[in-house]
Length: 209
Image (cartoon, rainbow, N blue to C red; front, top):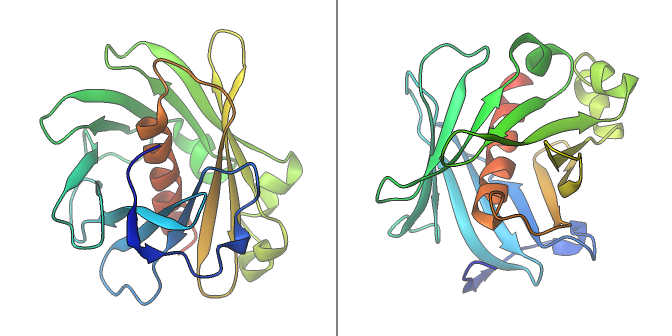
């Protein structure tokens, strides 16, 4: 588990279920861009994700704390085109951890679907929103979607073994994603799983705005 900042703790962390290791919560009253706090299972702040505003290409940076003095990783789109875009996850020194490739039209209007590749760009997993017909209805329900929280599952490509689950909850002001890590995987480590959670938060906010 990544290091924590014990000077900051989650408020209302009862939203985290017992089997969840992390909670990503949207920062409210953020005027430009978007920001998300990342908490560990005991409510300590372990990361702060900040989306750069007014960028032609998506740019998300994850820091150790809200001071933004220690960058942990960067999530950045390779190109401007949204449909089927690829997002690289790198360490501050430029080391590639992996990539997330959005499945175009389906991911925007039907249900979230991403392909996950390792540092050599070999496909190792996929992110897929579960929920059947509700996954489509949520796109059109507006505020009523609060009644139907979604779950996105990260699974291995070779045998569909579930590696992690991302459970989204909302109220009228903000949303959060609880992350359950179910299996260890050499190409899908905790940093890449946290990056997936932040990317899902950022796109969910944009797609429904």
